Image (cartoon, rainbow, N blue to C red; front, top):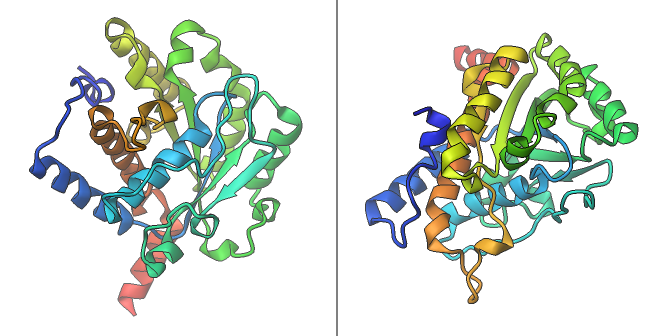
Length: 279
């Protein structure tokens, strides 16, 4: 069974052992230690879960610091043909994304730019081109020398199961993004909603996406990850998160984001650290 499938192969449990929860907290603390002001552009079609991904990251990080952290919709979520994102929106500690972090941690926390779905080329393509060409000012970034950019291409596994064309529609735009890879920019893939796939089709669907991204688009294998999104449907009547999904979803977010934040994926930052150590 592939690693992508194995993550969601166990059924949700009503309770996790204390050791499990402590291990997850330690791994999340390890994730926070990787924060180096990285910046990520989220691209993908309407309804793929880009905004939900931001909310899930916010909740997962805050839960590490506060066991009673509530799930909040930092990024307003749209659905299908009624997207809520216009052009792009910037999410950071300053925008309330990491409310439970220490002030010093907030300064290093990554920022995410939630872009309008790829089908809207009028707004999307100029922004993508600006990023690829190094014109970071297009995103209101005044601190370019500290920016460690990455692109996260978001794929909805549930839609790709029903429509083979989902993987093809973003090809043209993805090639533009991949041009940036030649300049050292990191390109990742986040597969969302894989946790709701039918068990009989999950492995085949995820393997198809994985093969397409790694073989056709030449994305490195370690950069294709499943990330489960939290939604309002996961909430219990008392406002707390359903424990049957809370642990596994947070774990998937931590695993994927840890890979995306690795210093080895950001040569400029790694070189800066090496020079600082030498001095």
